[in-house]
Length: 249
Length: 249
Image (cartoon, rainbow over all chains, first blue to last red; front, side, top):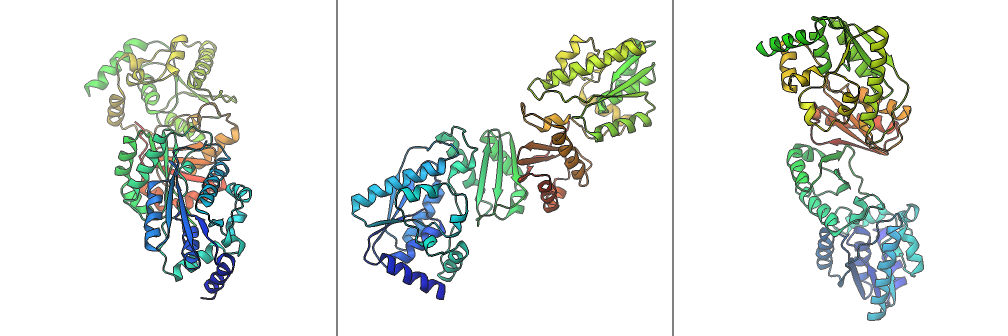
């Protein structure tokens, strides 16, 4: 596969003999990057576990690190970032501060993340933080797009979990979010995974919950009575489903 | 039917030889009351058409007035009541002021409405206005409950349309509501009636629309792509359906 060989060669040129920290979320971008770099040089994958990252995401990250023999460190953070419109920027900034400390502590040379070329064209407020902290994004620098990543992952037989985003995205901006709010969403999304292995989003609008599913829509409809019952136990008054399927990629 | 005979006798006793204005919404309560009173005395049914009452509701009210030979007057009001938590009270107050003027103008003796006994136990801010304007509610005074009304209507073969509420209930309190907002909801609910003859609610949360249906849920699911398309033409970004059926009664 030419695309893959080119990418490998480019990564080798850039990172050979450098000790690399990977900002590792367990998503397909940072996973693929980690797997490729792991064959080139010494890497340390760091997963930062905040209260607004689901245990499910952490678990997937651990499983894949084991499977692909990645050197993984988990850093736990108790703080819930303020739920303001610039929350992504604030969070990334905190993440990169942590990664920089780890870099100093373990005497690594460089920090990379999984940002891909398509991400540059999205409205991603987190990217601003990246620049401030000298984080390298080899995939976007090498103009690797999401579809390339999916293609290469498929070629390498890397099973990637459904795309996960942070749990703060389940809430509207400027609502004060407690640990209990986050645990509620986490618990309900875990429950809904009984009906699908696709991506799930439970959006919280106070009394109202909106479920978004990537696939298996009909299964959710078939089981709607059970689902409503479960959500009502958690205090919701109305439980709705988005009639459009959630687009994970 | 004993219940019906008792009700008829009581109404005769109360309203014989009195000229009665009925606050007529076209809903089953005021419809049944109008039909019964129409056999007892001279009545004038008044339907007040505001921008937040759907044309569909008006149309049903006209059809039933014709069918049951009711003397109907439609009073048109341009004003949209302020969308505050006490909107029901403010609206009822306006309604009763209009009805009182009509009463004076046509020299009627009394104004009645269709409030039933169950309504007294709901949180109905409109009831407060009723007291201030000396409006009589024979059904609630005679302890006639919703289930009695449904039973009697069935016995008399009165087909009643699905329960309709005012269109302001489709919006959260304190949002400023324009004529265009109301027409949008009205248009979309009319569109959804292609799939059901049950009650329909389109709740507007800005970019997000939530559909609630009394019955034919599966038909809405089957036609979800069409429905989403239609709603997106009206500017909504997300179109959801409540997983529980809307309880009309």
